[in-house]
Length: 303
Image (cartoon, rainbow, N blue to C red; front, top):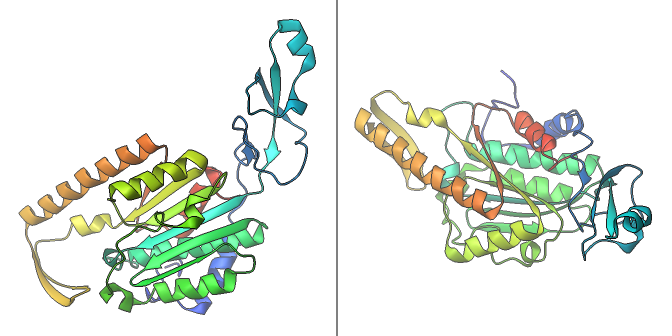
């Protein structure tokens, strides 16, 4: 079985993060149309001027660059019109990784925490390989790290390696989500934001921070679940959590109740995210981080 899909241990080592660089390099490329910024008034490139391909012609808006006014169409119609050009993004990316104690769980292949950490590693490597600007905030157990500096990849990979350790499952979880109470997220504008978390609920303050983030950025929310956890045969199991090894009795009734509760909570979360304007995608633990990274590529969150 692929070492990417099913690593030897959920605790990842340096060799595994080196392997992630290989997969990041061979993801392919995003469709050209997606890799360009086309939103009205959006100026995401550090380069002056515009690209060579005109995307569309539309009525002038107050936020438009006056240099892009089409004077011929303006004179003919009597209304100011602007040319929108395909403009290659500077691809400034913000990666937010937030792992709860419950993420350190899995019935097959690996843990949810491990899969999210693998994906974070691929995103980090891909950003470096493509010359993109990457900022991040990482929260797990009692630890939290953040950086918006160049050359931070070695430190970030080391922190991800530490985040994969099972001892984090026994730590007290931070109360606030990774996207709240942070200057890094509060000041984020015109970025591709990728949120990797197993959390499904948040406070009103955290929701306000999410709305602010989505208002000024393109936000992608990636959720990974272990669907097999709701299809276990009836019986007794030994499961580990932050309180140690516990014996759990599974009946058909308790399994149905757990599945119903999850579906209801997840449906509510998806509706909230859609209302805010955040693109949400759910993947199963049986799907590789390479496949999830390719989805992000197809959505323009990676290039």
